[in-house]
Length: 192
Image (cartoon, rainbow, N blue to C red):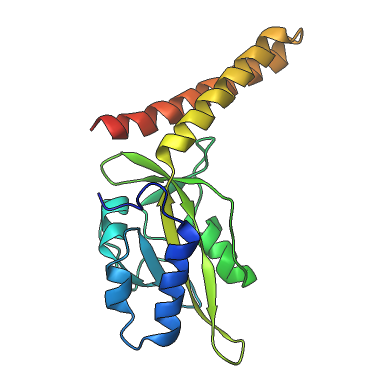
């Protein structure tokens, strides 16, 4: 799988892609060589380009004219809730015409495996300030996210054991179980 190398600065890679799109008439070969999944959309969210790393992440080849907002098959939040594509960070960036950062999502591939990723959706504008589309880079954070979710499950269990209210304890235990399931799904991918 082609993913960003440890220690590589995500913003630097994104800046390379943005510079290529802004200055190179033949920008696709530049994006094809980037070591991270990166794709573009039009102003309506229709996927217009993706590199090979996107196919490896998504476990599928996006379909021009059909896929909108994202190259992934399904998306989930870190709590395991399904996230419709029209509510994903790229959709939000396009609708609001602004950069979205500091979000983590989980991609499910058609074979059922999952990967945690941090998206970098960035609207693109022409010289007149009109939005022309958007670009998104997806950075693998599966290991980092697995650790964070396992810690969160532990916090929920500690808090549940300190509660005197049975309903609250049950809710916290349920949350901890969901975090543990998400960690197990992410770790199962690493074992394959």
